[in-house]
Length: 247
Image (cartoon, rainbow, N blue to C red):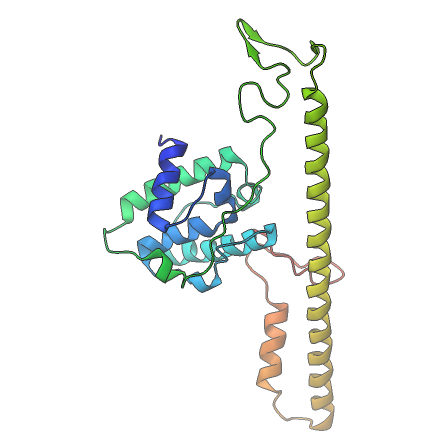
């Protein structure tokens, strides 16, 4: 298996980005562009290279799923796991991506900056793990000869357990705020779609009443079709259309 350091070095060189952690691949942007380097026809204008929110990550993976389906790439994409930006899940998928690239890349020249049309590629932020070293996180007092000091064996004067709790509380607060923001954004766009749906429906009904037998407006019908369209495996819940996509 390729090491994390080697994977990041390969990824940064190929795409001319500056990722420092495998977890940052959870945005989906880098995965999309690696596939683009193989085929050269991924719609990079739809890939948000500086995605910062989970709904943006999911949109990136939707682009990738479409490409996989078109190219008949028989590899499930564990979107729900990858967008959580956990190291192990993204490490395993990045290793697969590199193997796929090695087997299919034809050696053609590839300009990653031109392909993404100079779109900003801010290094994605991820929630840092509690422990970044042998003495970090919940390992009170650090490592010592013969084993680690257990949490219950709290040393006098050590503030590390309290710091760990504070860090967890800060992460929980940040995640709660992020979730609240996503819910508000979802409701905001859902309300807009609902308003459009009502306007279109009223216009179609009004036209039908005014001119019986006349063909319906094709533009309105196209809008209505888009509003009501779903994907394979997606079921409309009872009581209305849920605009959140499932993978």
